[in-house]
Image (cartoon, rainbow, N blue to C red; front, side, top):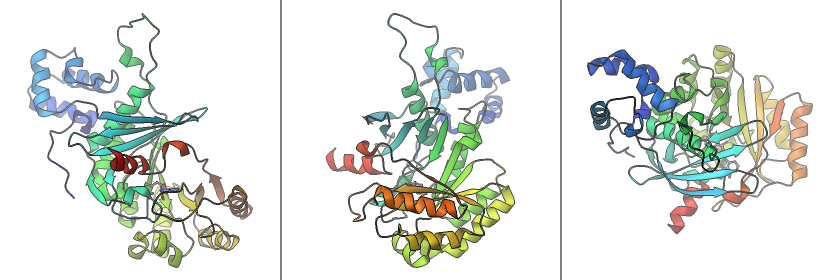
Length: 364
Ligand code: SAH
């Protein structure tokens, strides 16, 4: 797995890194501010668009840093408003990101790798292994693509001086697309800091959720970062025998180690971990599984998010009936575990992790 050598993206630098860079180039400090404003307030999609900079400087910067959006290959829109974007990287690899609107927010689900190496049984992202890590600039570019899409069309004939400055952002980010974020830790954290930075895309830390399949060293590292991102851990099973079958990562970091790490994370950061639990008919959705899960979580401050399975090719499991999902939810709530059930949205756009890329690989 190798990330190709590409010119670094302008979106891979933290806003604060432009000042020392300008100094290095012998430029006055206000140039750094113009660059950051151009990138993150006016959402420039090329150096040419940052017209506050002299042409010569734009050319110099263009030599060192790429500034170009990811090409949108395909957009699928479902009747419930969920939009799934298939984007092409410079080397032709494809990644996907999903925009999920609700009454009071627009959540964007972003990818961190092309494919995934962890091979969870029901996850389409792992079906073809991991091709490569995404760079920080590519991850930020996913959010930039969403910003472009969320831009309201100006009324006919109206040409405001700068439509880009009107760009809305997604209100929430979930790192639940393709890939395992803690396998690409440095690039993911750098990208999230740029997305979070007030001078960057400016999405609040508590509105950014990282999801891991249970990479223990990643959780330990995140605990030391001193940032307020939310952490989700994909659990999916209440015991090792079942989790081993669903998630090969469990053989490396079994449940006891994972739980201990989550408790330490909570003690260190004061933040509560959310456990994701995908419900699969007959396999992990029975009352005995709920009872076992309650026992397991008894001493860990946490939340639980239940996700009814999105059926995927290559995995025989089915989505449980609504009544089984509700019974599971009820059992956890009765045991005073803070539990929510994720509404499955975007079913008709293959919005389960990695599905669109797989389908397009088959047809394009
Ligand atoms: N690698 C990270 C993030 C990507 S997956 C992780 O494992 O957490 C994001 C979430 O979607 C995980 O909880 C994952 O298990 C879940 N998921 C993947 N495929 C799914 C499917 N077909 N149905 C329901 N949930 C799925």
